[in-house]
Length: 512
Length: 75
Image (cartoon, rainbow over all chains, first blue to last red; front, side, top):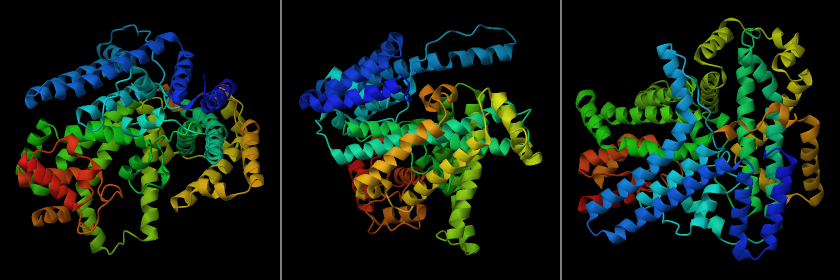
């Protein structure tokens, strides 16, 4: 069931209406029922994988927690906890790895050996990355004593399957999401108004901006030979499309959560205002970033072999570099994992390494930057320097989008080269209609106008929020007439300015 | 405690470690700085810090950090 469909809207309205009509103690069961109906609408086989992850994580959670009570010897208990946790992680990440990366491995082996191995027909359950990461985070939190295990299987099943977030996140933590899912909620008119605004705003970003941008983005990236002078337009369009698609989807998901009184974690914080790549990853796909930090970055950095490397680095490179080098290495490993998570292709591995290397380099150079800024009297607080940092980060991010969106690494490099040597804006002005024909969808210059106006609106809202003014609070203060007008404008804009979702496709991150 | 403050100021010279009690909550320390601190504390005080110890309550202030160091030394 697509998030952009009338049946999904009816599904949400029914779920929300029933949620507040039934006795409150049954609310979480109601949500569980709707969550499984939603997931089963995608096929029973996919739901079996979801159920497997749910049951194994639930058992592992209880197992890890009960070890401390059963075994008095601390060392023995620690070993047992580690064994249970490792089993659950290997089992679930193993399933994810096999389903997602087998064909990539076959393709790579075929390429290297020259043999022609057949690809396998593997089912990739919707949202498998998201619910696997969320469940594994839960087990690791219990292992580290950060949260308590949930003993009711059905309550835990709701944590894994809560329908608004299962397809594309945000990746929730049991310590903050669990209690919200299970406690009762009463209807709140103001909260519902905010939720509806957030949902409509999300659909506006997705259907009006992202789905209009995708037409010429696809045309340029799928036909780099025809539109060889438009690489920069393609990548800028992709940066708009990706942000509005993913953050728009998050607005819809978080808004639906709010309809039930459940506050899901924010996943975006105006990423194109970031002043460094590190800052960008603190603002873009935040829940994936914090997941990687807590469950990969820290454990890798504090592992035994990294401590040995740290000791070696201190001896050979001095105190400062010896301290920083292991962190840089851990960063590169984390972003390699992020790249692999994004997809089974070499271009995503390059995309991850690119980000990891920049962050590692910045970390190594940080003391020098501080010295240079002092020597050249550059104030870190000045507006000019701040704008320079934003522009520099935006440029670096757009270079990474070439790898993310292009067909493969050579195409990405060719498009970057053409961007520098062969910029030709006429290709978009003169044969504009051909772009549409090339991508198989109708394309007009009006679509560009709609995207640009939509972007201006998103930019204005983002700027306000960046300056500390909250749109939701401003909306709350308005009278019913203004609120109704805002709703009406957003509702009318969707069919009038948006692309039918069938042509533009679903949410990008729902494929993960 | 003095040695701890020295380490902190060396890693993050622009932060106010004497009074700030929201080093993590306000984003004063990022993950890079946190691990630099962890590395130095392990080296200087001979303690072993695990991922379970890296929680905001242990890193939000110099006092909290010192309490963690003392606790880990006793273990």
